[in-house]
Length: 627
Image 1 (spheres, helix red, strand yellow):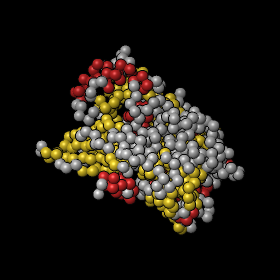
Image 2 (cartoon, one colour):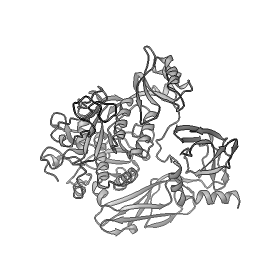
Image 3 (cartoon, one colour):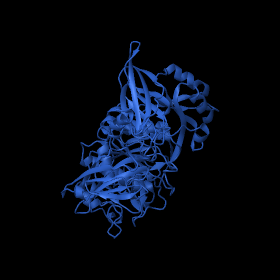
Image 4 (tube, one colour):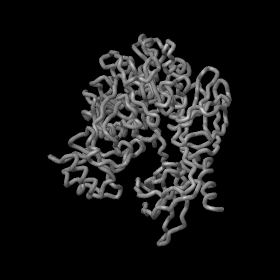
């Protein structure tokens, strides 16, 4: 068999095995366009608003405490806090007269840190018997625009879980508000007022959460933004008071990192996310943004997946395209993040709302939203800040309805159940609006071929196969409509063959609709590549980073335009002899890293690119020793 045939058998036909391979080896497909970005210069980093007196530093895993002190000595640095969520990450206070620029240059040039970066400043982005329920157009719009989330139909199935906790990472929470007090979280691991850290998390009497602005155990809202978002997430339902949240019964923990001026630091936001993860809290609402890309926060988001955490983030209020101008944290390329745009009551994208086909997931009501504010009051606010808690409440509601589900299943269901909207088609990943009823009652759709991240040759017929089952109608696979984010609708039915997709990155949607009009969709990313006649350019600049224990990240630079993926090989050294190369993985197109856990020993890695014409040269070997 010639090389081309080998590559075709192992690469083009890896569709059925690719998902297992990727899951087993920890491949991180870069399919959403918001992952770890190219390294920025210090000047570029400092162009964003940041704290002038501190930096975030992640030391290499083999750097001792003594050497950490040596690295911080020239900048007069002292450790303010350490983050258990991200190993070896610390928040450092700079010495008197030391600038952030000087500190970053000294630390990143020391050879002892993985990265040092600014501490960016971010900002807030602005049928029950509850008497103001009729004003909540986002829950149930009786007009002809059908722009609401169909909450009453969802509530017929469930009104939420009384024991499910949502973290509202914001300006705090008025936990005495009559519409929130019954749903305000109480830390079960703490005994109130005894002055003891009963749950061992380093915080004393954190009964209601924590205030990282004032560093105390009273996260009372002194702004209003956090209390407003909390009301949309989970104002108590059917209590004869005020409004109602998406989730009538969930518990809300106020994690305050934004001050009375609506601003806060990334270091404090990290502390909030770490608090939530340490408490096994599976959902957070994040109606804030700004600053630059933070590797520290990216790493924390990745780590939060271990507790099943879904991070709901506001897309921003600049009216701009996040695909071209990133807005953080919603632009981080992590699969447990949901980025939310805002719509108005007429179903149109709100003019202030950011959007992005590759970087924003769905829309939700965010214009003129009535909710709770401090002092037992209510007010209407607008912003993607108001859209995001609709989604956070729905994610918590879905988790509570399906307690055995993984975060991937919950996220897929919420995004798959959107109501298609012409105002969001081509502007968000799903092209639709949050819909509570379809989450509970719509079809469950699954795409079996091709696999997510697959590469498809231009002009070559590809089979697209999916199934859909509905609680009311059973098998509704025949109703599936196939669409591409580039080419639009390209087929109907459970299985189709197409060779018409254009060269480029596609979001493929298979959507089924039942007799009640509830829908359920599945999404995959595929890339159509030119039908190359020569092998691709080889990758370059390989690197390897220890992640702790026996886990490593191996990465490289993609120099090819026509690859179908990359082949990663590894080998182990026994005594002084290297074993035979093993093919660790065939990745997808544009994938430039894998996470591997090979066990203790000395290992080496190399990578090449391949397409239907053959493969490139391999990179040089890189070796690492794992404990």
